[in-house]
Amino acid sequence: MNTRANTIATDGSKYEASARQFRGNVARDLANPQLRENFRGAMDYLTDKRRQAFPSEDELETLRRKCQLIKQRCLLKLPELLEQLESKLEQNGIQVHWAETTAEANTIIAELIQRKNGTKVVKGKSMVSEETALNDHLQAQGIECLETDMGEYIVQMAGEHPSHIIMPAIHQNKSQVADLFAHNIPGFDYTTDVDTLIRTGRQALRDKFCHADVGVTGVNFAVAETGTLCLVENEGNGRMVSTVPEMHIAITGIEKVVELLDDVPPLLSLLTRSATGQIISTYFNMITHPRREGEKDGPKEVHLVLLDNGRSQAFADEELRQTLQCIRCGACMNHCPVYTRIGGHAYGTVYPGPIGKIVSPHMLGLEATKDLPTASSLCGACGEVCPVKIPIPKILLRLRKESVKAKGEPLVVKGQGCNRKPLEAGIWKLWSRLNTSPVIYAIAMWLASRGRWLTPAKAGAWTRVRTLPKPARRPLRELVKQREQRREGQ
Image 1 (tube, rainbow, N blue to C red):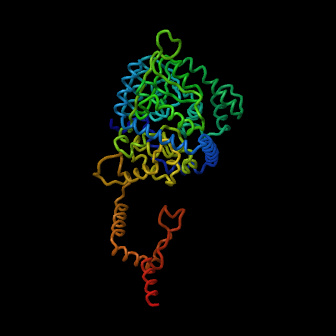
Image 2 (image 1 turned 180 degrees about the vertical axis):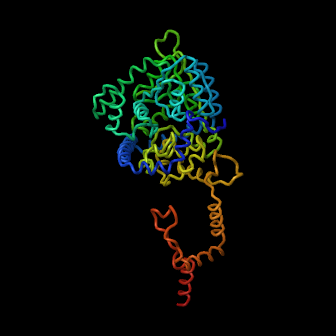
Image 3 (image 1 turned 90 degrees about the vertical axis):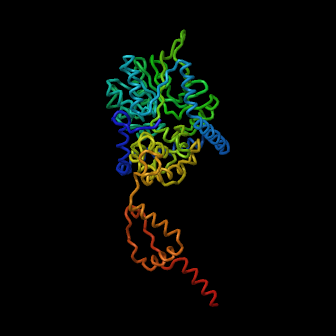
């Protein structure tokens, strides 16, 4: 299940180019006061909602530990569970397709739609389909693909990609949404009233459900025990997309499989409360089979596309495997001091924020995402709020290490060693030698104290916001020795 680089612009590879522009994106978005104001207000709201959803710290920690163990157990059995899931789904009448890359996933979905002579697709919220750039691929095939989640609908209308994995249009305020509607929805009576905006969007979408040939959704949990696809949502569009069209195609990453149906309730409880502060989501869909004889609704065909796209690379390493525990709640983003200031689009990747920094290198390679692991203060907030206890700061440090590995070392992450610089490597080798030899260290400290006046005022980017420290007039070793001599003289 090893991955290979994507090669066409409609298979998700567009994110490789945008991820390489991270530094420029950051400068651009930091200079946008409206964007920063939008994010600041939204993040404060979400963190407060999460805090209220977990009034008991003891209950929260117990639930986090339970769900961490569930995800770890399922990941340990991942190959076997995937085979069991495929077998159960096929017994239930759901067809399973495997895709190693985003290009393969898009090809499979496009062929299924074309086989049905479909030209109109409605899509529920799915970050994996964003990962594959499915909309772009289908459009290139002459197939209309419309987002029906309100946030995704707004983002699609704006020609953007989501800036948050739970609330795609969180970077826009109500005035900006109203302007979008005024330019794109005929007959829109301009207003900034949120309820009216939502109603307007739903009215524009309603007719599309009835005339769509195919519905596409993501999957939150895929249960191997029963062959059930679980879909969590609040708007009802996911239920419409997965029941009204005659064909339903679900796409998900291979890590979303869980072993038992009993594993779902605790994970669902953590997901909804961590994501939006809700005790339970408005809709929880369980899809186990296509429409049966005598049933009045539901699709006649159900397909599941299981995508790898670098996940098996993360799975192969015991420490990096913890990345796959993620249940896509977005809590790490909401509490991250970096994300809340630069927003999601600055990252240039499908998954922004702390989780994106550790997921994206496996999907796009470290060379394209080399700046992401270092775009962190390592404050630890992301790890503290992660509902399944992913040690994000520790994994960020691991990826930094992989990015400066010497050539010839065993391959762990595609693109490893991309940040290695011969001069820097030599300096650190000298530093290591200096700090492991007492004699060399003592000589170096003596020279540094006597030559402190040679310390430069600037030391590159590090001193843009810092003052370069000067060595002390005398090393601690000398001060201690002088103190002991004075005591002896007394």
